[in-house]
Length: 612
Image (cartoon, rainbow, N blue to C red; front, side):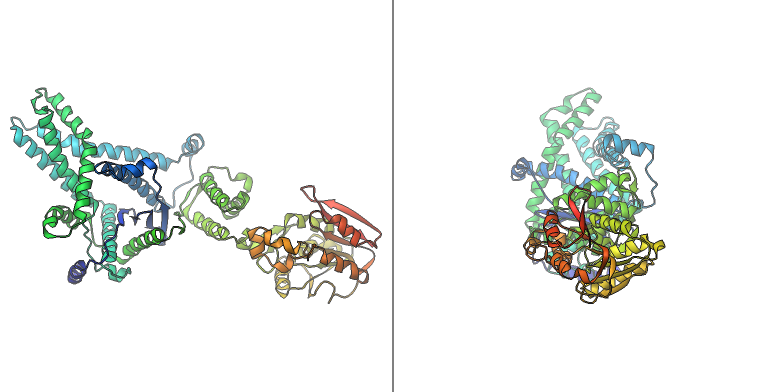
């Protein structure tokens, strides 16, 4: 009923052709592939109801580019590339709309993955494609010949008439019979969505589902028309070939059968080339004469190979079409990939390659997978299946990491000396060497000590030391010039259930009393070097926590000037230093009892313990 109501509108829109487009398409499982001049985009609605779009730039070798310009030859090249591309696209759409509840890989799957670096799905798909080609040859080439050979005493002319009629009948019956399959019916509805979207664009209709649905689901550049033309040319050329080669004179029926079949196979490239040129020629015109030749293919579309889509299907087709428009108009528009499940090592390898291209260390990819899957980094070589829901969680983090945002800001917390420390842009991300600083402090603490953590940032040192020394009845104070940092540090103290007194202070400005241990990891990067730091650091971490002045030693000088009023006799100042700064820092703290220098895990002189 609804179809009848929208039919007049569809006819009206069909007549208004404003901007013909080069974009063509193909229906896939729960989606549509669109292809433009420079790219192709496939949109699929996944089991969660989300539209995923995979877009790739088209790359062709010099030989393929040359062949694509030669009449008749280009038809063969396009047919072959379309078959390969179409098969791969169907495989990819199946990956998106695969079985989310499939089990973990078994021994055979693991053997395939380890021995040949392929999955069972890859193997099954390859076998299916091969069997599909063999089935097509059997149905459309072997079967018609067999049926004709069963009719005794058939005159030569009628033999070819019957062959043509049988091929046409088999072609139409095949298209009709596969409609029994529910998935094929849905595929044909997406085929209709593809046509409606292209027709809407060509007629200047706004690309929104409620308007696109009013357009025709029939298009004169459809592959159905191409297949019909191929079938007609096949009949004509095979008949001519049989006459030219005098195959009809062969008396042995078996030899005659295989001679005809061989000619049909050999002539297939020529048939494809001629059909392509005819379809390309017809596409240039839209008059009544040409319509006569287009009519059979368009009739097949209407009767069999397209069905009315719903608005959700149209949304998918529109998403693919718009992505192609975007990429064709903007050479810098990024490619995109489906987020699918798969074997862990394969997915991790791809993410590492993406990170390497963006200048991001591969260890970040390992951390993302390990944290998202609840695994240790050392276990990431296991042939574990990553499910679609897990891949989506991983992909969300990966995409954000590719923007340059530091990993631990994305994750939201990090492990630090036995504590979970929340991290965000309010403070620096705790480094591994700073964890060593916390260990030095904790090992230096004695019963009842008073500890002061200057430039506390996230509070990682103060919180972790308070946690490690719970049984020593110490008191811990932490200060920072940033109100935001102090708020973050308070959250970390509460989360780890430790008692730390926090104060907003520029070093000792609002600090009172004397302390047994004062620890400080101050800003020590030279001002002129900040612009050359990693993108993640210079664009996301607070500059106030990095900039140590012209030579990076401003804070150490300020500490040396004021520390006598805040440290007990025999107390310790424990500092983290930049690479190569230790000798200069020791000169700054000339009034001391003695000092000890300690190295980090890389053998760099990183820490100084000064006793007053």
